[in-house]
Length: 425
Image 1 (cartoon, rainbow, N blue to C red):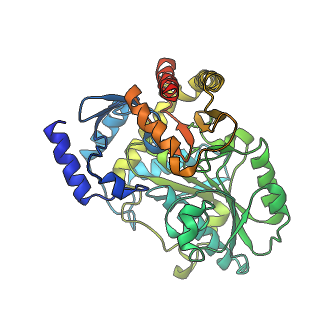
Image 2 (cartoon, rainbow, N blue to C red):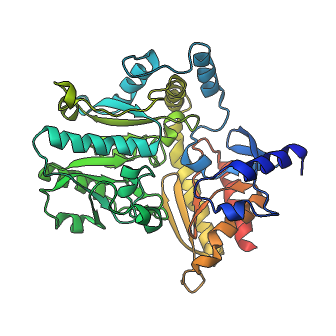
Image 3 (cartoon, helix red, strand yellow):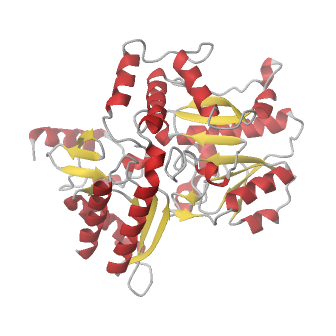
């Protein structure tokens, strides 16, 4: 082990606290985590000089690859002017341009306003608080509940987490956030009285943390119709699915749905900097006008950070310059064919779930039975995949494959080959 690696690990294991990590195992004698020091395109290098394909886009964020010269140049240019200034009582050109660009992806008169924050959780938190305050200020105080779907995940801040349906993430905060009604389907939703419901939230087309499970085709459009009929607001959590992951710029465009609130983060800056956006309608915005007490009293110190806005605008420009969306169908089909072959050749692959550039590979015993949870097979497979030059993380025993959209067919093959060789062993 190189001296720089050893020093980093000593400091980390003595002082750092990692998310969703068993710290006792992380700090155990003999455990040597990877120290990532460099990225270029879809590749990452550790401090020992080993190269890996970024198989989950650095937790579902990276779009056009690491160290992209266009995004690097945009950030550097803005850094020479100013890195950050308050958005409370001030504005700056990049924030105004970015808000206009985001609204411009939707028909005039639909999503007209953008509230910037820091990450996916805060984008959701903004939508929930806006939806709640809207009802209070329009005389619908009885509509104070939110509907969320079973096994959903919408973030870790208290309000966003209270809508989650994954027990291991929410059981310790039960009853401490927004009042929530959990449903598993449109049929179950339609059976609920609507008088108490302010809004319904969903991850469109596919649930992420629920082991990458797609929704039935047409469900999103049906949910939009139900919301129109009942006066319930529709919140779309596109933190994962936004910016090309499903094959369209936004997943809601697959079924021509426009929500009342659209929550964006992760890929907004191409995976470079923390920035999130909550888009909403002019009607909702207007309910916050008037006396000072009607203002939306919520915000973060780094709201509309100038460097983040610069990265986001460069990211959006690259979709046009590199014809990112136009090139996706061939890549998506290539992933599908490779995963089908993987399933045909590996007895451990129980099911493939794919939605565009998002894929989950569920592992089970050859007889279809699940592996015991304590065996943590998914973790073991991902650990072994490092030896074949692939970095990714599992959700229980479902392996996630979600590389940057810029991946070439050859780089996709590298990821598939790494999984194939790992499953053989």
